[in-house]
Image 1 (cartoon, rainbow, N blue to C red):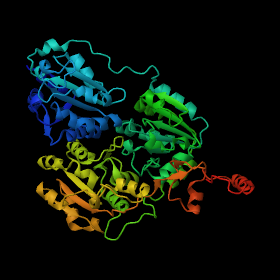
Image 2: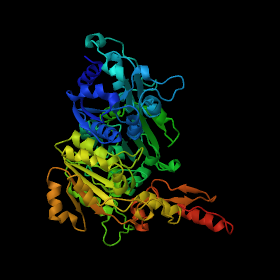
Image 3: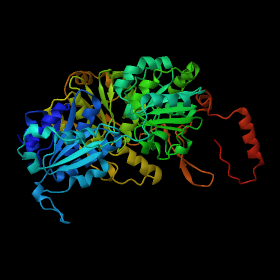
Image 4: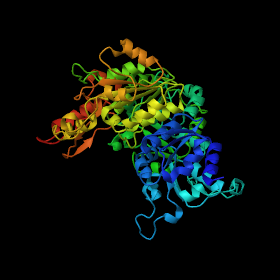
Length: 614
């Protein structure tokens, strides 16, 4: 057998069933091997294959997918997908072709073989593991490389295989030996779930307003398994964007998705907690707000993460840092009993119920409000749907602010890299992972245009994919930045400043995909109902006002010294009406005594003194 055939047999035994690829001469033996052993999905561009494989694996646990690419441009084209999976801590296996080992450049030579470029040098910084295979390696060594992407903190694995190694004749039995290398040793600080739960319970002792924040490091399966026990605990639960589908919005413990571009009510709940237990969330700046110094102003923070570097990065201030597996920790924690906090839970649910579409938002006539659109879409979606809210811009932030998720849905986004163009490729991977379920993609026109060639992949595979495009003539978030910071000096952000977009109906027609432009009352449109309910691909254009406002949001403020800083997570713009503040900011508002003291301080300040008012 050729070594490539043996390798693919090993992958098959490890649970891999699907291979995304772009064909090329330097990966020809690998492709010949997967041809008769895997479900092979050709894509138009390598980056789409990488994103699709990431989302395929993230969407389900039964099967696994990987990517085969060729040398040179195959590597450079997939870098964005590798970067995205790395930042989201997701499994992504790439087998890259390479020139013959005898043609590898050395001694400072830039290139010897045709299309040669050193792939591992390019991607090493954004991979969990990289290796160049110049001659067949034993099974134990190869499997250790592959599995390193799933152990500890997951991430991409890039294995570059020289052409002569792929095609080398080998005896499979002779390769079964070998000692697997230790590629991902656990941290000396790592504790098991029981010990982590014990430390958390001690940290929560005396807490009256606890919140558990569930991150993407906690699996769907674990949440399903412990849900009855969690309900007995009665502690309010929140989810990060990467864990948006761990709970339905109607769960009695659910109190929202906090985030810099998150839900106002959820942010207010988090700010009023006296103990925040973050499980499987790295608590990055998007999660805590850029003003991380004011994250959790009234409480202590307990963080559980598999990566000590995330616990030691210095922001936010973490009172109790635990290196442990988030799944194991939640399972152990769910067996413990805590003080009753029914009154706090009722208050948190009331706060989390604040409107998701701020009354300050403005939509010009003839356009559809993106917030009302997401509300209507949420109502239409079923618990079996797979929802892909793209990865950047207004389409992403509105979906993650306003989507009302249902128990059982699969929701996947990619916020770390936040690259435009992720949505369609990710939706392809998710749709192939769940062929019997409807997949829904919401993407902005700017992002969609970056990978629209993959409509060919959608059509060829006849995916049950419903695409909604926010058509706002460009890059809404970039337009907003240029409006807010440069007085509307627009450049390259819309059709009026150099961007070009296709006629959407004509584009989808070219790929044989039906397309419908929506208008007010779209949910009652008979043609929409037919396309929505019929299996197969369909596209819907949502006309969004180019000047649409996106509230609530985190704004900046002027400090007493004249400098600028971001408002804390709970201080979103525009401010709430005083009567609403009094109702939902019970623990954040100053007491009457504090107000009297502050007023006395103001009256005693000399003229012109700078006073910071909260």
